[in-house]
Image 1 (cartoon, helix red, strand yellow):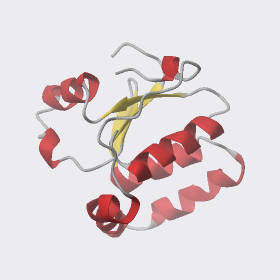
Image 2 (image 1 turned 180 degrees about the vertical axis):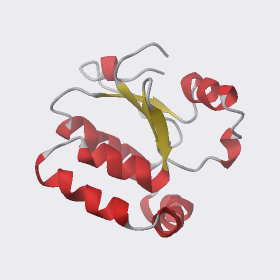
Image 3 (image 1 turned 90 degrees about the vertical axis):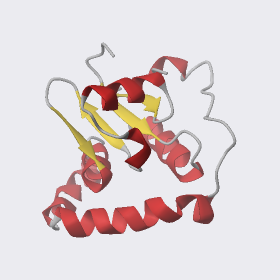
Length: 135
């Protein structure tokens, strides 16, 4: 996983997650992000090195190389803040206690397949977007 870009690990079969990734790609004007699915080797290696049970990980993960990694609501808010402009105001939501933010996030995550649907396979990026995906 050698890259100086921020890496987003996401559920590759979740319709909500795939829509979010498409939104991020569209708004990533500075080309800061790369993407990998939670179902892939990169995510597996990442979690294994940190002794995190990937089966219990139901979250988006933002990895900032040589800095830190973030999960759930904190990851989502930090991703959004990278877009600049009005998105920079998301720092206000980071002032809400993480326990409450993650509780709301977990409700959505738990129900995302029922509410938004699920694919049988991970998204296959178009040839133009292939370089943004690490798996």
